[in-house]
Amino acid sequence: MTKMASLLRGLSYRFNTPTPSTDFKKAKNEDALFPKTDPAVDGEDCLHDCESCSIKYPRKFEIDQDDKLYGNIGGWNTHLIVATGKTDWVRDVADEKGSVMEAVSKAEEPTNGKMMLSASNMPIPLSSHSDPDGQVRTTVLLLPAFKFIDNVTPAAVPDLIQHCVNNAPTNTSPLVDPASDNSLTSTPLPAGLDMRDCPHNYLILLCSHATRDARCGQSAPLLKKELERQLRPLGLARDFDDERPGGVGIYFINHVGGHKYSANVLVYRRRLSPDGKPLSEAAQCIWLARIKPSDCENLVRYTVLQGKVVKPGEQLRGGFDRSTQLTNSAPEKGAHPETLISLKMYTTNAP
Figure 1: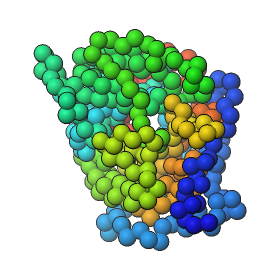
Figure 2 (figure 1 turned 90 degrees about the horizontal axis):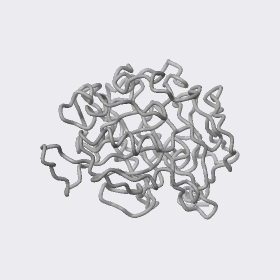
Figure 3 (figure 1 turned 90 degrees about the vertical axis):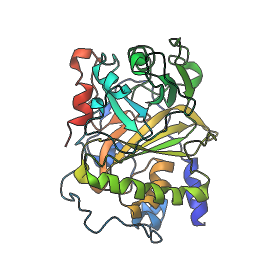
Figure 4 (figure 1 turned 45 degrees about the vertical axis):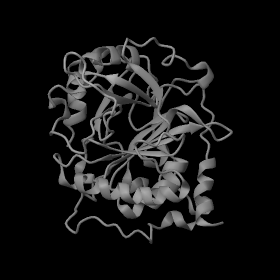
C-alpha cells in the first residue's frame, strides 16, 4: 500500500457508536483517553518522525522535556474563537479595548459550563462594517458545535452567550443523531446575528501568541507550513476563503497555557457517519504539546484523520472524546455559574 493510500485509509476511521449515558468519566492516564498508534495495526511508519521534513525550529528553541504533561490542563465545556485578523495580541486579549474578547470577559458566564475564549487570526469579514456606535462586526466560531456566528459586536455578546453558547452542545454532551439535534439551529437568533456551519471536518489550532512567549510566535508559522505540505497532496488543505466542504482548517490562536511545552496544538475532529460524511459536531479534541515540524506527517496521518495519538506519554496534555465519554478531568455535575472559574482566569493566568 502506498503512503498516499495509507493516509487516505485514515479517512475511513469511525468513532464508536455513542452510548446514551450522560456519565462522562475521567480517563485514568494518557493511554486511556485516546487510542494509541500500534505498529501492528498502523504500520512501522507510526514509529518514525518525518524523514522528508526540512523545516526545523531555531537553534535556541528550548522547551521543557521533563514534566509529565497529561492532565495538567483543566476541563472546559465550550470554546469560542474570535476572528481578529491578527497573529499576535496584547498579553491578555480581554484587555483589548472595544473587542469582543473584552466584552466576553465582562459578560455573564455561560450556564452550560466553562467557556474557553480565544482570539484568532481568522480574518474579519471583508463585508464587515461598523454599526452606528462604531463597533466593528466580526465572526466567531463556536466549538464543539462547529458553528460560525457572523455579525458579532461587543454589544451583541450577551445575546451571543444567551442564545448561542447556552444552547450549544458541550464537550461532555452525549453525541446524538444529528437529525434529532436541533437545539442550536432551531433557536431564534437576535436580529443581526447569523449562524452557519463550519465547512471543515477537522480544525487544528496553533498558539502563535508571541507577546506571551517568543517560541509560540516562531513555532506556529513553521508548523502551519509543514502541516499544509502534508495536507495538500490529500486535497485537505484549506485557506481562509476556501469554503469547500471537508478538509482541515488551521487557525492561530492566543495563549492557551504551557508555553514551556511549545508547540501547543489542539485538534478538533468531527464524527463521521457510516458513509464517511461528517456529522455536525466535534466528537473529539486532542490537545498536544511539544510538537515539532517532524511530527506533522504522523499528526496528520494518525491524529487528524484517525483520532489516534502517536506519543501520548511525551505529548498528550488532555482533551475529550464524546464517543467514549472520556475527558482528561472530572466533568462538573451541574454547570451553575457560581461554580465556574472566570473567563479571564481561564484564558490568561495559566503559565
